[in-house]
Image (cartoon, rainbow, N blue to C red; front, side, top):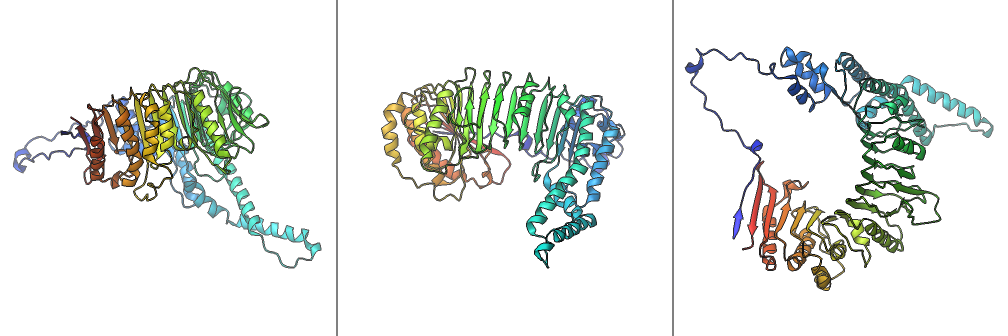
Length: 567
């Protein structure tokens, strides 16, 4: 019997139009002259400002007389650099920021956010600057100097080589950034730190080179609680006084060991650290860290990762060590670049959640077994966590024998193909305490090679049935996120679900959630309904099973939620 339920967000429901009274009925009534906007309390106004950039906040001054100067008391400063088509526009933007900071009256700045993508800054301003008369004169002088140096070789004709022009223009770009952008950002940061700022975000995403160097005074701000910097340079730091810092995000930066250790030693209450696309450091040590994220780490040649005293290649000198005895959450994500990049973990007694969704490029076939041992070693170190996430790369290279896992919540972040199915079976065989399974799968409607595999899927699950049955006794909930609508992409998913339905007697809910799918506009609900039908046909061993399907309705902003029960 099918039970259909639709849940909607009331904010998306169309408002019922109110009938207008006849014109004669309200012409004699006095108009309501109450200015409700001006009567809003300051706390509500500042809350509204917290969702806007500073430029948009200033625009609210036209709403009422009271709002003309209210924006000056906003403790959240957020500048987003627009696309500038010439140097005059860039200068105008810097002048605008300076004028805003002069008019700000807030005693304390809660947040200072500066977003300046490369496309908004350099592609327009520097291209115009580097072709100026001064730049061309320097190029001419370099040409004359080169001719003088090579006269003894009887060179009669000379053309500036393209490679030299690229090197020179890059140098000009660096000079322009250091002279124009660096001091300006320093001045703004000085204002923020002088007003006891708590949150700082500097996003220079997309810049060709990390030119901007964080000033020394920035590392002595004791009021900072959260920092997020992208594409910035870290100087040689003497002492760091970040006594209140709890969250630190560093993206696309080269960090030396001395610099990183100074930051960690100067942040005694740091709880969250994320290093994304970073390289250069070889040691992470902190007794305060509770959550660590290493995303797309770039190894130098011959470098590897070691937690505490465990190392993979004893002869290597470049070894990345991590020592965090009180760590609760560990996330190893993204593409690991480098032939010798490795992740080896020691047993972490406080760890409750681990995510192993990284990917290492395999250049040689003999590395497959090595990486299989690597994954096995990782699982041995995190086998006591309650929540475990495993990516497709770890599933593909996982070995035959895996340690017993104590996780209750298991998450597979996999592509919608058969390559990870054997790894899923091996992980399920090693999870006797499992209660909830989440499959976060990625696929595209144009996938046509998903159905190809070099092993018998049914034979795989039959051979694993006796071992997997004892481990699925406590599984109650299964959730599938973002599967897409391609039928071939659903085949490996259904193979996993069929095995669960046959070996998990307490399974009572399977939820298919496509609301957050990137392909939500292309989802065909009838394909999903056919998937639900197949699930119900194989639910004979799960009498209390309930299937819930959530997907965005086509042609309607409402989200549909449909549920079926197997009785």
